[in-house]
Each structure stands twice: as C-alpha cells, then as structure tokens.
Length: 167
Image (cartoon, rainbow, N blue to C red; front, side, top):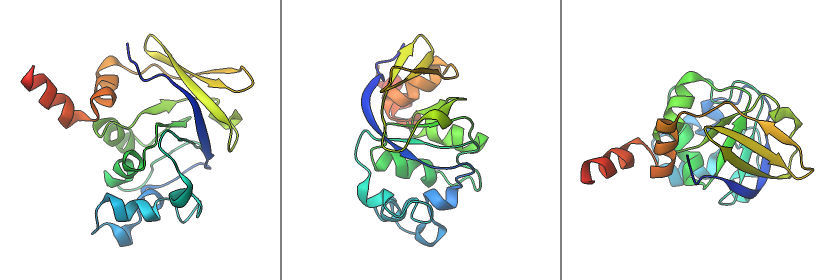
C-alpha cells in the first residue's frame, strides 16, 4: 500500500475543535507559508512554531480543522514538516484540503490516549493504519483509501497529477 510508515515521531498534544484560524491566523494570510508558519497555533500552543521539528505529529481532539476553508491551514503543517495529524475526527473541508496538499491525517477514535511528548510510530497494514505507542499499545485508525495515500506519497494532488501526466 504505502511506504509512509513512521517510527519515533514526537507528539504535540492539542485539544478538540482546533480551528483553521489557530493553524493559519487571518492576520498573516497575506504572507506566504513561511510567515504563517511562525504564527501557527500561537493562540493555543505558543511553543509550537519555534519547537516543532520535521517528522513530529500533532495529536488532537475531535473536530480538527473546523472553521474556514483556507487551505493554508493544512499547507502550513506540511511546510513545518509535520509527518501526520492524529485525531478522532476532522472538518470535511480540512480533511480534503490536507490530502490535496499531501498532509497525512489519521482518524483514530482512541487518539485521546496518546500523551504530550510521547514517541509514536505508524504502521500501515493494508489501508488501515495503526498507531504504535511506546508502551506497545496499538491504536486502530480508519482505513485510508489508496487514492488519498497516493496524494500523500506524491506530496499532494498537483504533484500526483504531474507524475501521472509524465509517466
């Protein structure tokens, strides 16, 4: 299926109902992703933008990405190098924008068990990813259709379409 399995990703814990304005604050929308990235999540985690590292993951509560349809809210997390977002549910618009931009979203009903700073892995078993906790616990995630994983693997919908056109 996919080679997106990961190991030892550091967790940034967030609550429920994280909205797109927290991810990409409106005051900075006239700027590019680099500037938006400096302010990503500053309203809920002032340490995030300065501390996030490539390969980290966000673990959030339900309704991640609610609010406006601004695609920069997903694009900024890709820009910052996030490997994935793990949450029980997402706004429909955010879900689509994220995959279109190549950001992996894992729908995990038991995400609330994962703790701040914990190191987790993700294993793909067919279309159903599993989050592997440091204590050995395995948390099942909803299956991800192959066409969405193709977008993640390619870095987004546009790169995927370019690949297909060339090959």
